[in-house]
Image 1 (cartoon, rainbow, N blue to C red):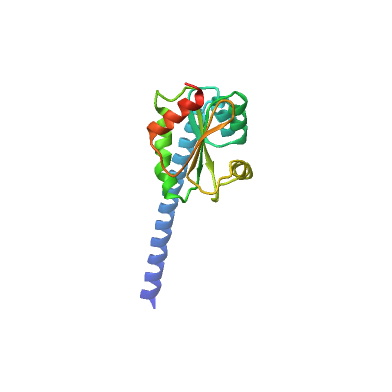
Image 2: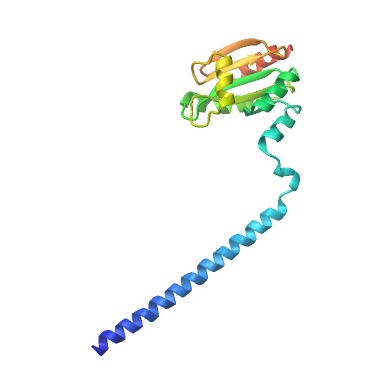
Amino acid sequence: MKAILGILLISMIFLLGCTQQEANIVADVMEQDDSAMEKEDSMIDKGDAMEIEDSEAENVSASALFIPFTKTAYEMAKAEGKPIFLMFHANWCPTCARQKPINEQAFRNPEMPSNAIGFQVNYNDNETDADETALAREFNVTYQHTLFFINSGGEQISRITGNTSEARIIELMNQAAGA
């Protein structure tokens, strides 16, 4: 009986010691995380804390862009008479996944008109919002991976369903820009 009580007492001391040691480790890790977050927060410039939609709308005036669709940025681009590229994209679509990096590369290419803007418009997926659904209806989109090229007068100059090349995107955007 004394042996069992002794083993129980030693086991409890051992468990309490381990628990305290683990608690100290957890406290140290949490303290390090807090100091890292404070350092990160101090590095953030207050001007960088804009909402994404606002920064995208402001950037419509900059050089060629390929950005996620927002109604604000799209309306501003139309009002400014920019040549517009629309890609109706679904996050589950393998064709869309293959086309996206091609679009991004095309908009980084120096041959792309500097005033061009491209929008990735969610279509028929769990990220699609009401504005994107309305735009899809306006353009009679029936499939994801549909691409539109719109000139500075707001007229559609080309529609492509499926994949296309960087060179073709640049060619059509130059036509849309009147170059």
